Length: 158
Image 1: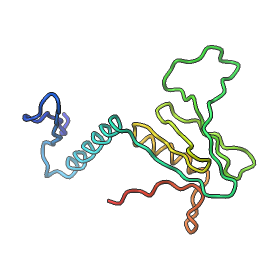
Image 2: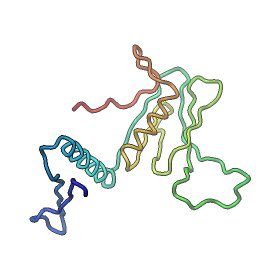
Image 3: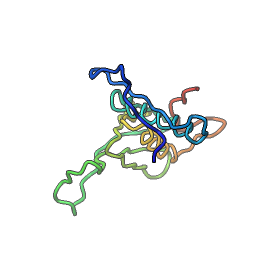
Image 4: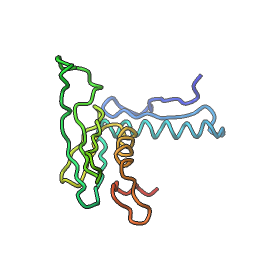
């Protein structure tokens, strides 16, 4: 039986529904931890669907560039797929290697390059956005002293 409950508040109206997240026993440490986790996951989902999330990455280095391009269709697949889970765009990064770095983007994450050195990721899932940004940053990990080459927006301070 679950110990975290989501209940509508009695004074909430149909126009503005409000809910309460509660646990069976708030003195139990594990229940308090899951209580906060559930509340923050619900809050992130609501913000993601209503406003969306955005994350910016900046390329710092000589010759570093980024571009978003469609994934070319392979000759073996003649009919286009209608599945929404298949990515249709990829990120083309030039990071000082002898070859370009091609990263396929998930279908629920969109990328834009307002300039050749800035990547803006947008989506509704905060965790997925962070995973994609981490995968991009893993190609050139920032140096601890110079803090280069792939920089994200500074994390919010608690």
